[in-house]
Image (tube, each protein chain N blue to C red):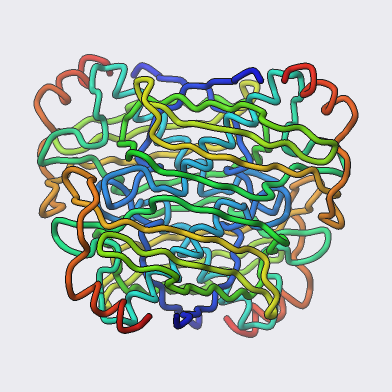
Length: 133
Length: 133
Length: 133
Length: 133
């Protein structure tokens, strides 16, 4: 149940006319952390995990606690909370000065590229995630 | 419990290297429908609902059922499932040929612009939504 | 030298913390108009123009004249200013109440999907654009 | 005429169904480099440069040379090519393994927040950029 962390700066592209980070973009931030988390496990192409398979988001639950602002320096975390043959669940937070501003549970499924049907993730990915977890 | 609908075309900007709509963008599509739903109630500035107040997303729960593809013609729906003084909940779907490809429950809170604290929405907005619902 | 036009509404997703449309997004708006322009010529998949070929932007020149704001109702135009076997140039504007707020010249090249090298566009696309122009 | 550089990773959010980085997003990458370039000069809020003034893009010229791909590790550069009281011009590149894949000239104007009219940038910003240049 290790936790991966990465720093992240808020740019003007991330904000909206409310003067805060556009809420949809927190999901992009969280995906960056999931990607880098898998990259540290040795996978150079974390999204397109094999020629015939890719990881896609199956479902997400997000709670917005406080707004992030332009130029904020944030930390994004990713913990693998559940692992099965064909999917992984992540528990993620975005923090500013250690204080959570957004939390999400995100289930990522491995699917066949052609059919988009669930399929077991490559054996070596499963093993690496299992060991990390 | 009326249901608002709007058509939507998928452009290349909406897609990702998986060849499908980038999952984060469904939330943008759903927000467009919420905005137009409120606009049909007579509010020209649905997001910045008053000089000192704005609507922000408080929490969201999304299920991705099938991928949408480039050039798809979609329909986005928005139903107000709950109304309180300081927030509204929407039940939303994205459909292709009548078949749901994404579903979400989204809670939108009215907040004070300066403090970002919850506040009652303007009386006339509340009344109009109540009548519509 | 016909001119294609389409209406466009500004949503919160399009804005930034400056309270205006994020300047990068005008390019998205313009691409929507180029896409719909080609669609009216009978091409259902305007970007992925053939199995082995796609259209990509080769170069762009943009002038920002006035900011667009949240909830603005805009018009985007697209005129094909030059046509060759392997590329098209578009002259485009974004207007608010008939007044230009952004102008661009955009050169779109047809490339081989595998190599990304320039290639002649499909004969029927070239003919249709030639006739339209 | 110093040149600022920053590293940048391509995420799935940056790509499109062509399997490459969506061309519009190179402009986001370049803005991140301009922002960080100004931040190294000691300005913590590079975009909202003063309470009453902000920097906006006035015009841009971009040439796309080669496509960037998912998971690419890129370098973005920013050189201030011209400095005046109310604007700066940047000459920028995006490189992969030292090879340019995109080049742009971007003129950034300082404007009054209320009127969006050109105005002299804050004295200390002008001095710092002048010294850096």
